[in-house]
Image 1: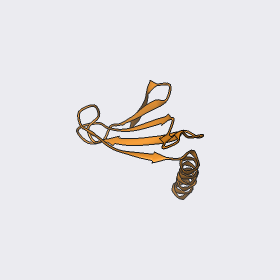
Image 2: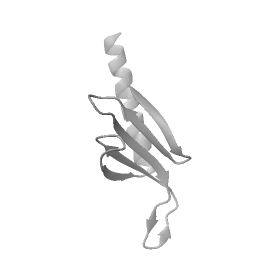
Image 3: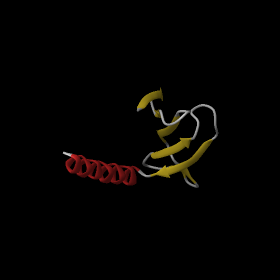
Length: 87
């Protein structure tokens, strides 16, 4: 079971009850800065915490909005295929 918790308007933690200690996946949207200053599009940062609020974050992985959307689209399609298989 998982529980989505908003940390602020741009950060969300997904707390996953797995095993003895909950794990968490943190997702944040925000500005990306390069050598020439702030870029035109935001980034999506994803971090993993093995023990929610009790271990160091792993990551972050920085994704562009296009990569995030493509990833979400493919995962949703795979989930729908899986659900059809079980129906």
